[in-house]
Length: 246
Image (cartoon, rainbow, N blue to C red):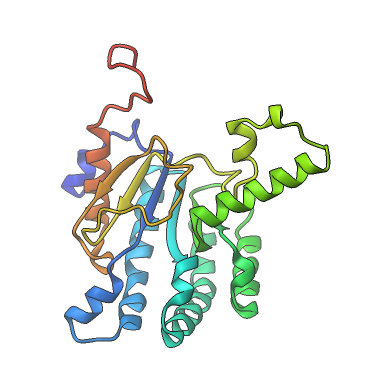
């Protein structure tokens, strides 16, 4: 068994880990390839992370796969990413079922090309009865979009007099987010050495532990994921309380 895995306390594994998968383009540039080559090689890191999360008992793994801002990238890159998404979803569905992994998605998926959206929905339906790890893909997602969308729906309810302003609580607001069926992340991991949250799960990350690594995403292995978990388990999560109260 890997030495890192030996050091993990399986009784203190985070329920939900979210990852900002950053560095594909830089990884490809370092070896003289185009950005899409980096995205293609990111699949191995996704597969390893999913396997590792399932192995140690993480219940939810959310991957920031495509932001609303990413639509502004060059057309060739966006088209290539969408084609890669479709191919990967179709290819990985049997493996997800074999490993009892359920696929979910968050974000404005109405903006996805119809073929990608249909294949995504098919995979979600095909894996819906699985009871192990829930793999959540954040696609065409941004936190500002999500918060604004929730606010609009709540405002419409108030306008129609079906909801009182006094009824608006944190719990009610959370029920209008795309993550309403998903617990808030315990741990956020960002690769590539950047120290930003990049419009990702801003509401949900309020008490998450943050872990930043210089490793570029295509090089993010199970061992690197293990390091993040070990670091997480050394921290004291107080949620606003004192150490004595925890």
